[in-house]
Length: 244
Image (tube, rainbow, N blue to C red; front, side):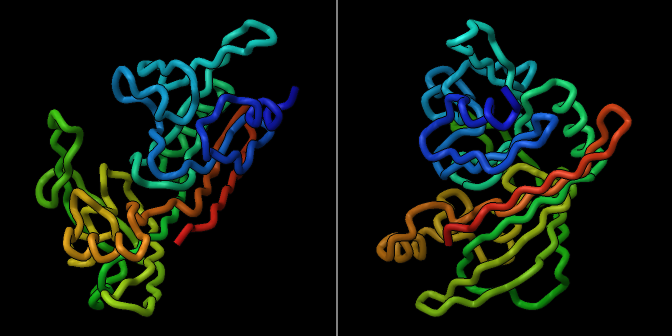
């Protein structure tokens, strides 16, 4: 059975779509909002990408093949917040996982997001540079601007959408991958993402919810990377249509 066939038969959570799988088992899926990239604590297995156990040390799902009785590891290569939808990468082979992770380390990965925000950017450079700090609290992870690590995002495109309040569709390309990076950077510029219950505008969120926009309007629409495996170079590209 080829990698693509294996990928389609994995016990995916409801709403997860397999987008592409290459010859080496590098796999792109689209996850809906509300699905966890992996279970963070006991009892969250039902909310995760795969209906399988998760090994935090290996950063891999352990999937039992009911036909052969053997266990297959499915390696998680990147994560999205539960509230964020879009492309997530996984790998069906350990060697492929290591090669792809090396591409992340050497910044040979390009990710593109679309977000609906309240308002519109007020000029300024198209490259956003900030410093973000992260705190781990009992309720989860919370990031804030100031101190911490450097965060950079390229503002690629702005589309103004008709209606009240003013909403814009932004195409964003994060250069770094910090926790809640896009959510913090938009909020800092007073253009918070629609539906963001942590860093957003709560009054405007209520207005948007009445119009049917009840989720965090952030979606990973594209991921592209180049990786090296067994002395050869491979390019992998996956795309997903934004739901807004």
